[in-house]
Length: 158
Image 1 (cartoon, rainbow, N blue to C red):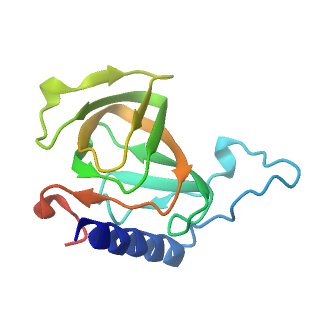
Image 2: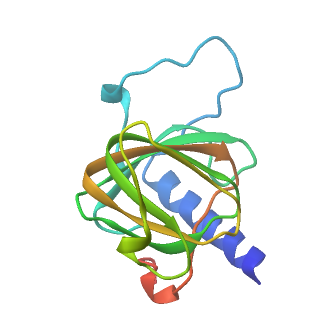
């Protein structure tokens, strides 16, 4: 059941972003892919609700291809407990991400990750966190990608 939910969640996320024109082609090693922060196109993240924006650098999150994207989180944004169907690799580029493992949101249980901080989480392990200051994180991995909230009431898509 969890696998089906993750696949459906990934598909819904992919469709929402494709509709917003935020999908990017996977990079296949042909030459170089170069860019600056000004080249990024930011848009809403349907699976995260108000206070979060996404910029896809490469990949289609619904396919089994490499992806790289950035999330911009407003100050105080709460990342409710959730799991992903694939490894999550995060690097903090701006602001501070407070992050932890667990099924219950507990700000006091988080570890402070400043600029340059990183986290790697295995598929299916619950996690949560919050942003201090406007925070930008970069995520990369191999899809398909999706998010499943531990408490369905935390899912802004429902």
